[in-house]
Length: 518
Image (cartoon, rainbow, N blue to C red; front, side, top):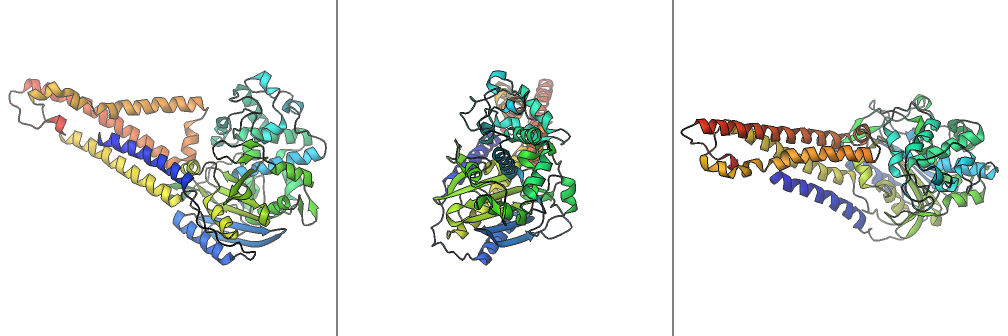
């Protein structure tokens, strides 16, 4: 029963974490200064890195059409190579804004219409609902309102990267829509995978070639890549995974067939060029990558994000920070995290790239601006950093305490069962056998129920256990260990009970303590 109570405590704590992270109010605002204290910003970043145990981080800040600050902190890989503003990182879902920009470039050229059905460009495109699929437009994909569910875009994140964009899109023919087309925001990587294939079909180039030629080259993004091999030659940072709060290097599969949604590679310096273009009507250094109307379309709020009340535009989230309107987007792969923010009022743009991640942290920060970039943005706007998102340190402190507590109690429970293995039952305790067997509800039925629930959940969301292990290995392996420990304790208890009953019936003298009191 102690373990059962602790498990309830564990769930209550996790729920409290989520409520707390939504409910904490920002600190009092200070007066905005047009000359930000960059040394204070660097000090803040260093302190957050130290407390959260982040191996490496790159920071870039722009003001208007100028880069005003670039910094690298920590190490890029296990050799100790320092991070610089030119170090490439995988930018995760920030890749979506590149795909959206490419689509609007094709719109500007008259090759794509936003409100045209996807089947105009991919004639065989279909989901499990062929009729509804005819109504899915390019705009709906950009706004994540196609009806394609969120879980559909997660499956490939655990893949090997051997597939192609066409294969990924053809797999959607078995995916049912979970909302009427054009009505409901459902964030799904597959929306942008389909857009990537449209770019290929319309331009006649591979998606990667198009991004390289039409975005990287004009924006002078010389440390940005659509190939892991090329990025490694340029010093790609090594990704890390937090294990119970401690980062370990993790060279995980790079997945080109999810490139339009999650796997573009760039540096902090290059991303400042990209932000300048978005902040200046598509222009960077006298070069235009999109007309002002196209940039306005990319940034225009569309679908309401029900979890936060923000709006999704096209590869950008339209929200606010301390009441000030902002454009932002985060990016997560299993072992990298990135954030970018634009503050139109102050003509500020910020990018933060890090080389560590974990699915547990992604879940806690779901739909929220990253803690460090929010803190930097607040400082630039004259505010103190907010606690709207729990720190990695706090998340893992709570998680590690719960893991240690539950693991210790369950191991002790098994030790107690084994210590009294050879003791026979007293006669009157046979009438209270249910007290002996009651723990089996926890030790056998719970793990079997969890296993069934896990299998049903993976099947329902079309996921594999490998995806869960990839994104949260510490949580996954601990759950597996607890499952086996519970099962072993339950089986041992059953064998012990029947063995002791047999010995009790054969005994004429019983002088051992009650098992039920163990």
